[in-house]
Length: 221
Image (cartoon, rainbow, N blue to C red; front, side, top):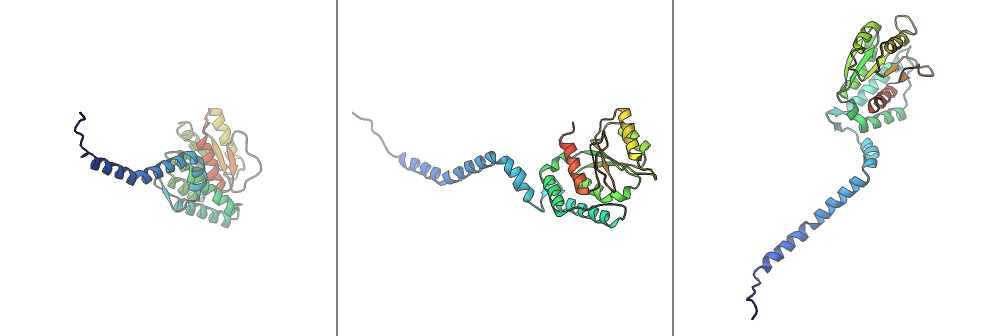
């Protein structure tokens, strides 16, 4: 009357459930980690990653970037005409931001105008380690010819040059007359209060220069 049932399939079913029970903890851990990362992604990105040190991001070894900052600070403090006073807090803040936003420097191009480029060698090393390409100019005319091409993400310039206090300001005016929209940051030996109209920023500190460049590259508008 009833089918001739067999229970030969039970051992296979038992084996299947044993396997499911065995891998279940791993699956649950995976789901938990996925939830935590998705839920707290912003906090992890902005608070956990900056605390990591000695790590290489995308080929950028941050210990070398920090060494370049230290060298720039040392040169600035040892030069009589420069007024460089960087606190540990300022340095840490700049490095923390680099650890989060290092990608903005990748493939960026800077134009650097200074009649004494040897004074900024450590700063340029810093940016090059972050993946920036830098064109160097020593006169307003040379820089203007490069700037009108429009292929730079940022211009960094001194102000006092050739025994004149406003040569850099003249360059900014020339850029404006030519309609060059590239943001400009003045990097000077001694910073005075206020930013010249039309400039993105002005600083004498290598750490603040690093932060200003991040501000430009994160929001190029």
